[in-house]
Image 1: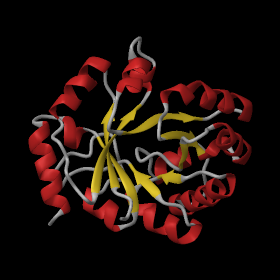
Image 2 (image 1 turned 135 degrees about the vertical axis):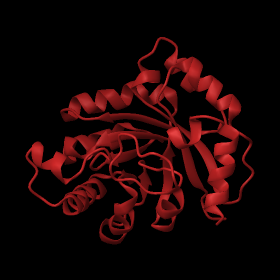
Image 3 (image 1 turned 45 degrees about the vertical axis):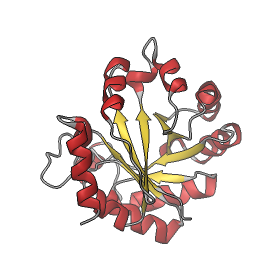
Image 4 (image 1 turned 180 degrees about the vertical axis):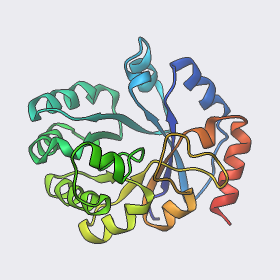
Length: 228
């Protein structure tokens, strides 16, 4: 059986809110998809956050701290997260080859996801911080470096997943996902779940489209969309 594609619920909230969200998530019985959680700063830096992450069973766990520092500091960051037994952790590709390679050495069974360019950024934003390459060319360059350094997959816009797979042979997990008709929020390079999976993503990250309002109805909309 092929690996299932993963729908990560973005838990960018307090621990109490995260618990309430997960209680409302319907049981998914699918041969194609499974549910994961993405936890970032707000949960990990809270008083009870680490214990909450450790307690979760039955979900793929994705720790999203986007490590970005000198190699030894990144290594120590990876070591400090090992007790969470996460399936994935993120590291900025801009930390460089040495940092990614060292992180890989100390990550154990946890897979490294290399962040390319944040989906909240566009060409104008990149120019403001000094990048002169076209956005798509920069993403491909970063993906090739990540592959060489040993990353498992890229974090990128859904619009770049197909090219990354073709040119660097790395799978992608894509944020910036919205159900048809939903607001884009602070994301600029967005797409639908179906578009992302059709373009080769092995996982998608969804926040507001799934957890704002009636969560069960949102999941119903999601699977109707995926099966359309």
